[in-house]
View 1 (tube, one colour):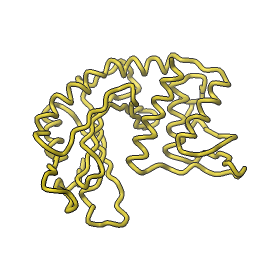
View 2: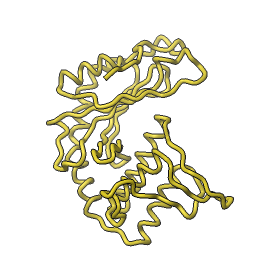
View 3: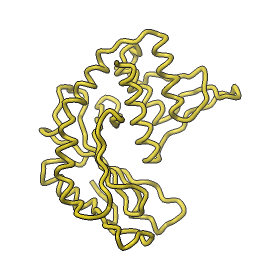
View 4: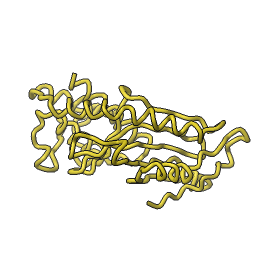
Length: 242
């Protein structure tokens, strides 16, 4: 996996700012048995001096520390970092669903660890990993709860409408289509959650806006918005699973 961050601080950062080198952290994770599954960095459109310093998101997995009882998903540790002040060093849990390549992220019911770019941050990473890994059984149980929850038609419609509003849209007559046979049973909350997540993240489905005009949902590519949307969708799904 090619990690392109420069691992040097942006010129806008003060002397007190300490770089948390993503490549060094990646080496540390590798020594612990983690594997980098994907790397994504924010687009830089105007301030080209930010190239190589911008926010980036790394997804890692571990065959033992992040083991799961579910053979259709892979639990992941997510690391967000930046060297231009746009993000702290952040670690949280997520999971990857094989059938649709959905990269999902847990919400507020799970701990997210944020470390400031100062002090002896490298020494804090080990304990942070332990705290994140300690939540894997809880995530496994949450996935089980989502799979076991059945919804009636009114609940399905309500979930879709609440989910689409997370995109900041006033909508009606929302169309969310299952993109594979595995997700056609919308009464199953896990399948509904994944179908809606894929629709809102990748775009392509239609909705009617407040002016009564049909519009097509656009893809979300911004790392900050993508993370926030995924966290909120997970929390919404867990609310319906209760």
